[in-house]
Amino acid sequence: MTHQAVLFEPALERLRGLPTRSAAVGAELAAFALAREGQWYGTPRMSVHDAVAVAHLAIPDLVGVAAYDVQVDTGMGPARGRTVCDGLPMRIQRKGRTPNAQVGIGIDRDRFEDLLVEAFANLP
Image (tube, rainbow, N blue to C red; front, top):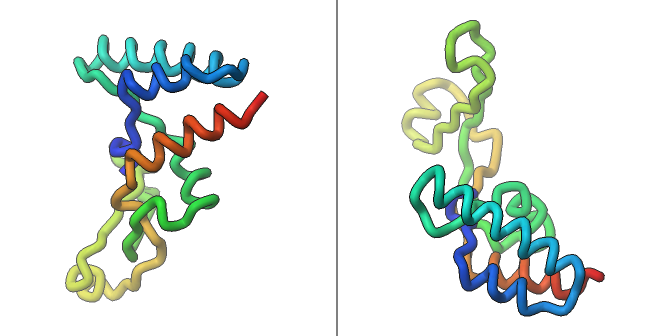
C-alpha cells in the first residue's frame, strides 16, 4: 500500500518553494530519491513508506484499512521472516483463523502529499 504514497516532481517543487530549512533538506532528499528511483525503476516518482505509518496514526481516515489474517513465516525456507496477509474471509475461515490485524489497502495520495508539504512548512 505504501507504493501508493508517492511523490512526483511537483511535490519537490512545492518543497523547494517553502522558506524553511527543513523544507530545503526535505527537497534535497526528495530530489535524490526521485533521481534514484528514476534510475533504478524508470519511474518519475518516489515512494514514501515510513511516513505513511506516522500519518495514519495522526489522521486515521487517510489510509483505508481492511481486516486481514497476518502471519509471519517462521519456517526455515526462503520466505523466512516474510509477512503473509490473507484478506479473503472464506479462506481465513477455512484455515480456522480470524482476522488479527487492520492492514492498509489504500491511501489518499494527494492528501498525503499535502500533509507532508504542510509538515515541512511548519518545521524550522
